[in-house]
Image (cartoon, rainbow, N blue to C red; front, side, top):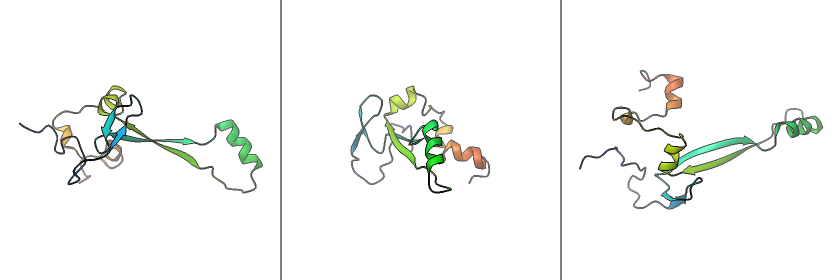
Length: 110
C-alpha cells in the first residue's frame, strides 16, 4: 500500500505510543502527536477595564500579561472548522508552515 503522507499523519518518530488528549470541540480522544494544536492569545481583561487599570497603575510602562490558551482539535474538527485545509499531493510535500512562506517567500526559503 502506498503511503499518503511521509509521516502517516503523526509526529511520533521512534516514540512507540503517544498519550491521548481530548478534542476541544467534540471531545474525541486523539493521540497528542496527531492532534492539531493552535494557541489562542487573548488579553486577560477587556478594553474598557484595561483603560481603567492603565490610568490607576503606579508604573509608567506596565504591560498587562496575555492569556495563552492551547486548543487541541481532532483532524475532522480541524478540517470542518477550517483551521487546517486539505492539500493536493504536491502541496503535501511542502514541510514549512504557510506563515513562514508569506514572510520569507517559497522560492528562497531553502
